[in-house]
Length: 81
Image (tube, rainbow, N blue to C red; front, side, top):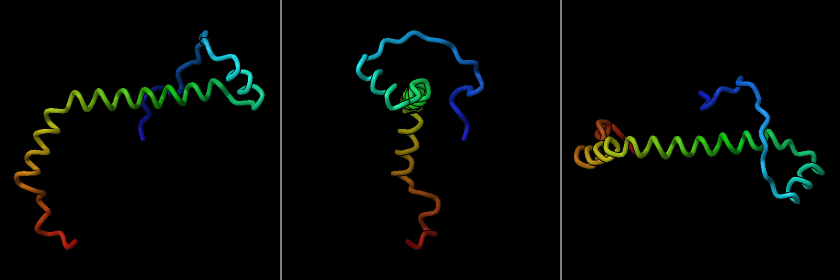
């Protein structure tokens, strides 16, 4: 599986604004906030790239779906289920 970003890129200090109670509780439970943020950002990025890909390819997807509806799958005759 290919990654959507360079996991070897250097870390960069960043200032964030976070709910103080969430931050306090996360520290009490020894939650790695940086790791959680990176994971959430990776998921958000993955979703945004998926949405962009679908938008950029919507015409091809529509064409494929209409051809499939019209002609079916090449293997339809061979299936036994």
